Amino acid sequence: MEPVTKKPCIDICEFNKKAVCKACGRTRQEKKEWKQLSPDEKQAIWTRILESHGSGKGKTPRALRDLYEKARRKQREKA
Image 1: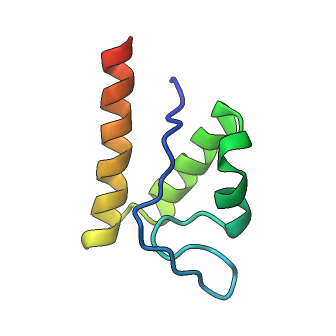
Image 2 (image 1 turned 90 degrees about the vertical axis):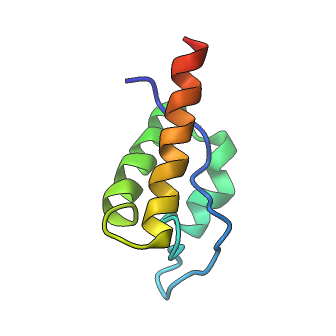
């Protein structure tokens, strides 16, 4: 599968005590280094955060899943 490289930010940046964003699930370090990460590293992060923060009901998980699907559609259109 071609990795999704669009950042998973949904513009609700609030970090917990472990420095993990409550909205997108990335760490401060991952957010800071996002542009420098390889496509495989980005996809691994996407996979992890979709499981941890994109599952369940509610506005935030739905926004994260929608963002991922939008990026996937754009990839398919380019191919």
